[in-house]
Image (cartoon, rainbow, N blue to C red; front, side):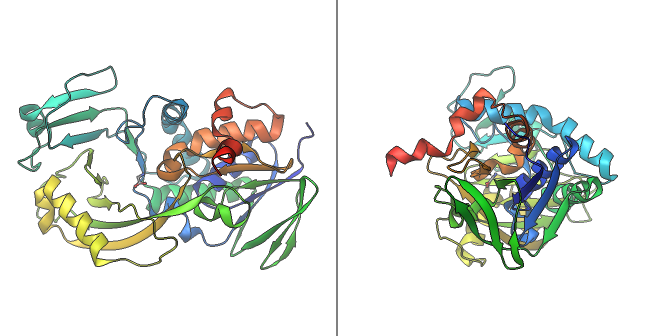
Amino acid sequence: MNVPSEIIVIGGGIIGLSLAVELKLRGATVTVLSRDIKEAAAYAGAGMIAPQAERIPPSPMLDLCLYSRGMYEEWTRKLEGITGLETGYWSCGILAPVYEDSETDSNEDAEWFDRATIHQFQPGLGENIMGGWWYPRDAQVDNRRALIQCLRVAAEDLGVDFQEGVSVEEIQQKGDRAIALKTNRGTIQGTHYILATGAWSGQLLPISVYPRKGQMLSVRVPSSFPKLPLKQVLFGDNIYIVPRRDGLIVIGATVEDVEFAPEITPQGINQLLANAIRLYPALKDFPLQDFWWGYRPATPDEFPILGASPLENLTLATGHYRNGILLAPVTATLIADWVLTGQSNPLLTHFHWDRFLAES
Ligand code: GLY
């Protein structure tokens, strides 16, 4: 395989930026085309690094997620070292309370707490909580306020050409190769292209990726509290509550198949608040800070699309659905290996774009 001399990453979200940093650190010349960094799913998410709390069943997807979780601390330290900026990585663990006491096993990375234990471990939970799982190795990162900026600065400090405000309208093709990108700023050419445009990926190539909207909100611990009441993420039924170390609390998220619908709805916010207050009643008095939404890049099996594409000089890194923040380090590493050396980690075979062809 010829090493591509000029790599163009289409998409300036967490996947595009993570890849750009990794490729640049390995000596490639990299351009990132970003339409609007604030549209990125990583700008909207809560920053959970949560393969266990998300209950991903044993599968290549779980293997990929656990591999990435294992890389996270060192990866964020590396980015902080390059930039001098924080990422907000916090190995806080995730507590998953339940309303029905049904599960009692445990394994080395998960502990079952009965009713008395969970209420002692996390005071203030709703009275109907009957027990729950404790996942000490799940974690969080401050994606919205820290990681995404840290990645962008790292990319620029390393010499990546990051171009904001560039909208790719068409991938021009000749035979089985991409030859140029038609953009709002003219035609741009590289030797290799990487598609990392998240929920918008299906607009540029016929691959099965579509938006699944999530509405979010935040509150703040009142200044009258002597100390932070939450020191780990709470992951409940259709709700998660993610406390940051400075007292901000991020609450998410709805899961809506409404295409691109750029608005907050009373029903969405009502659902979030009702579920959050049921799980942790003291929240009802915490001052509201902000509301926002984002679009998860969903695929039919909810697994990402990684690696080769129908075009020989275009690589896919998209469709991360609920796990883009978690999967950023492993995606950057495995896709950089593939693009620069042609070596495909065996895990990538499970995430090939053509797995959906038989269904269509
Ligand atoms: N990662 C959580 C969510 O997508 O809502």
